[in-house]
Length: 476
Image (cartoon, rainbow, N blue to C red; front, side, top):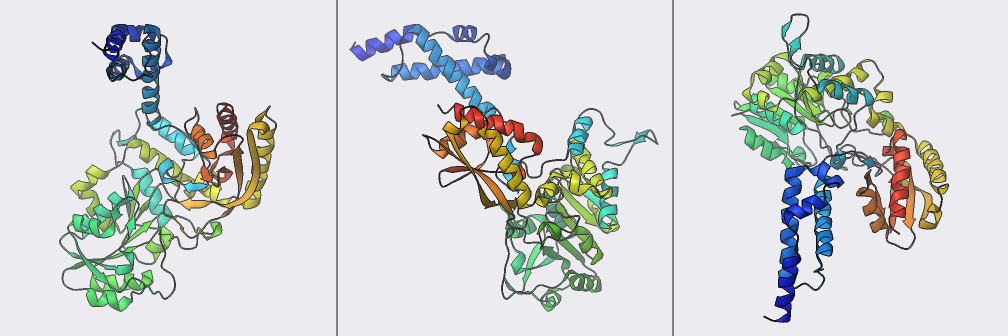
């Protein structure tokens, strides 16, 4: 046997057993977090990894028993930490993207969070307390939606894509759906309007051109197989220049004359006029209903500021037809979603949405307000012992982003905290921020970490302060 073979055999003899590894980790935090079954599986995996390294003759592998045990324990802890970090947990959103899809879109209001916690136990999701028997699921949310939009009926499903699919399959299957070529869009991850139409059983009939569609284009396309006119809000893109699109009242009059359904996929779901926040192209759901649209679908977790949901409002007969569709049962939402949605809608009903709903509060912040907050925050950071030697900090002008596919051309002015670590790259510092005990997600640009306090709640500032200080200290 050659020397490397002898070394490998010697190393294998010193390799601790899985039981020894578990005993060594008896007091480790990983044990309580992962649980016995998962920890045992991780121990076997780590022992096998080190065994393979020894057999491969890697010169970096320690061969003393104690060192081998330490290496295995470190492998277990790093593997578990990697798994644990992939779970859903709170983060501080310092990106300035208000409706951040990767971070859960709209943060819920305090009242909505409390409602979710209360509904997590037994609750009256489908129980009528007055009658003492089974009740109407989601009745309160549907009543509020009708009051706020002027619609005759409403139902809620699990997201806006599900809402579109339910409407098309329930009201237009086996018929033709007329849509402008300028609205055959792809929204989000692989949600393409033509594909949804095809899967729903409806036949797509394109009219007009990419930039110009007239009311006559719709009228000329209608035949005995036409079941619906579809209007899609483009959401995350905009065609400018030589354009034309019929107004909703004209489409509604045509649909009524031809006895077919006019359906609008409105996207973000604004219940109030958003022009006060600088968003000039977002349709207000109540305006669409007033214009004569038969069915409107929109999101609950974008500009509305509630939980992920697909909301459908419109004529009572059409809503009840969708409610009886077997697909609706598969797409309906949970008790916690209803609880959060009810609480969010109640804020609109009592006219406190602009102060209660985080998305609206963030959009309402002026650049001067954010500059004042950011300057005060930098002063607090600078007061921490030794931090000015580790980080170079300054306040610069910047732009926030609405996000979530809403108002792609609108970037409200803001102030950014620009941080440049001393003696290391901004990328290394940014990684420690997002992998820390309280993850902080920020922007990277020109070897600076940029933070926008527009999307940081005032109550989160203390945690952000600690996270920045820890990330700076741990880099040394």
